[in-house]
Image 1 (spheres, one colour):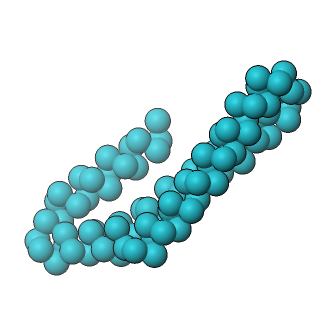
Image 2: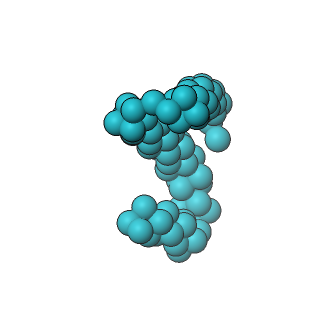
Length: 88
């Protein structure tokens, strides 16, 4: 993983950790469901951004290296596996 991607990913994961703790406190405190859901949606968006960062870094490093090394089939299989996971 590229150092800048790793740093940004860890920063965003800390944000998600804090947000999840807040959601737990909201549920323990019997907060209004809609308010809790708004926070869970924010966490989902944050995780999607993390996934995008990691994927972009992977495409710029490992995918290019794999193609250069003649492992196009393996690289495509991995990408298709990820695509199929998203589509479920």
